[in-house]
Amino acid sequence: MERKCPVCEKGRLVEVEDIVSEVEGHFFVQKGKRCMNCGEEFINEKEGQKMIEIARKLGIWGEPLKLHRKLSKSARGTVLRIPTDIEKNMHLKGEEEILISKVGKNKLLIEVGV
Ligand SMILES: [Zn+2]
Image 1 (cartoon, helix red, strand yellow):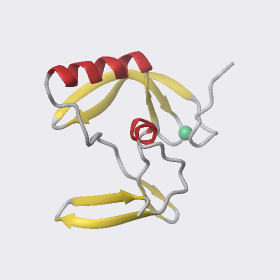
Image 2 (cartoon, helix red, strand yellow):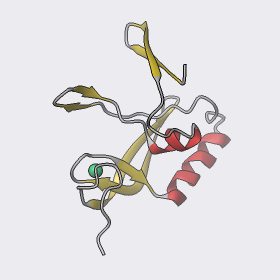
Image 3 (cartoon, helix red, strand yellow):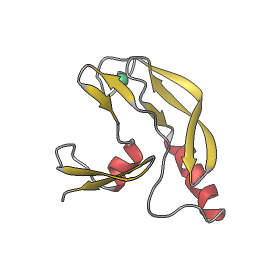
Image 4 (tube, protein in one colour):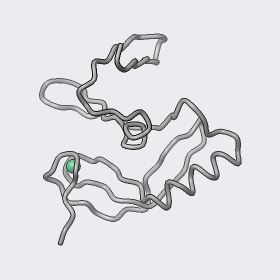
């Protein structure tokens, strides 16, 4: 059976080998799956662990988790999807109140549950 994307529940997941994650300026290319519909990327669990291990060795892994993600456009505006890793790490349910502040020319601070 084909796996459907758990985010949009519409897209088909295809195997890709070019998922790029950024950890503190270091780029990791990993295998995983990408949704054909919404573009959400899912890094293989094993690959994700490998990346974390390497990042730890380099001394670049730690709080806060910093992952590079693209913004997307929806009819109602610009959408930022919270990466699954961060969602899990912060135990987000998707119904939290958030506060977005502009803290620099190209920096946004997102506070959860304030
Ligand atoms: Zn999707």
